[in-house]
Image (cartoon, rainbow, N blue to C red; front, side, top):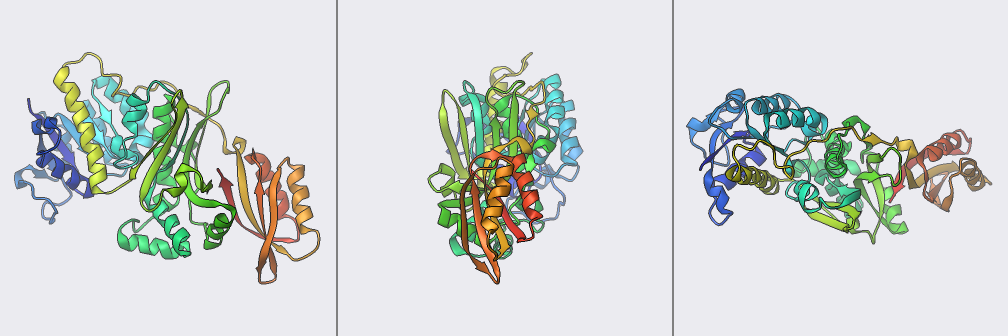
Length: 432
C-alpha cells in the first residue's frame, strides 16, 4: 500500500522533509511506502537545494488540498493565511494534515480539531513546538498517565542565542541581534521572536495538550527580551543567576474551578536549575507531573533537519494507523485531539513570583528606607536591598523580593515611581 503526500511549501523545512522522504534507506521501513505526489511552491523557476521532478511542482496550492489521490497534506508555508484556509479545505476533502505552523494552531486549533474530528482525519503538529524535540507526542502518549502540574520551557532558539551571547561576551542586545540576523538565526523582522510572541504560541499549544482544554492565545501573558541590558546580565551573574526567556504553564493547586497560569517573560534562573545551562539556539522543555516527577526534553529547536525529523515522524504516525485501520469509525484517541472546554487562565496580577528590580535614585539619605516602606505597605517582602554603585550622580540600587503577588508588587512600584528621589527604574525581571 502506497501513501501519497501533498507538500505545501519547499522552503528550509519543506526541503528537509522532501529529502528524508526521497531517501528512506537506513530509516524506518514504513518510509518505503510514502511518496511525494505534489509540491506547492511560490515560483516554479526558483533554484532549490533539492531536485524534484518538475511535473510534481505547482503554484496552485488549493489543487493539492483537493487532489483525490493525496492521503496526507503537509503544511509548511507558515503564517496565518492562506495556511489556515488550506488546512481546513484539506480536512474538508478528507485529508489528514501534518503542520509545523504554531501560529495557526495556537489561534485556530479548536476550529481545526472540530473539523478534523467531524471528518475523522488526524491533524498532527509535533514540529510546531521545539523543532526536533519530541514533546507533543510524549504529552499525549508516553506521559499520558500523569497529572501535569508545570511546563517550563526555553522554546525559542533566537532569543536563547541572543541571551547566551550577551551572557558569554558581555555585549548589548542590539549588537547581538544584528549578529543573529547575519547568521540567519533571526528574521529581518525579529518581533515574533524577541517580543516573546513565538514562545507564547508554543506554550499555548503545550498547555492545551497537557491540561486537556482549549486555550485562548490572548490569555497568555507575553513579555520579550528587548529591554534586557548587559548590566542586567552582569547583576544576574553576581547574584547566582542567568537570564532566560521562559514559557511557563502552571496549574494552580486546589483551585476551584481549575485555573492555569500562562506566561512568557525574561526570568532570572538559578545557575543550579536544569534550564540554566541550555545555551545557543537549543531548546529545552521541563515537564513536571504526578507520579512522574520532573523530566526534561532537550535538543535543537529549529532548522531544516530537526524540524523535518518531527514532520516526518508525524507522517509516519498517521501512515502506521492507516495501515492497521484505514476505515476507522473512530479516531485513535492517542493521536487525535478533542478538548471540549476552554481553560480558565489566572490574570498575571494573581501570579506569585519573586522579582529583581534595579532603581536609579538621587544620592540622598533615607532612599533605601523609603523603598522598604513602600514595598512593606503593599505586602511585598524583600529578600535583599543593595546599593551597588553609581551611574553618574545617581545611586544604583538592586532589590530582590521574596515570592509575592504580582498585583501587590505592581502597586508598590507605582507608588515608588512617584517618590522624588526615584529617577528611573531600568529593570524589572521575574525570578524563578
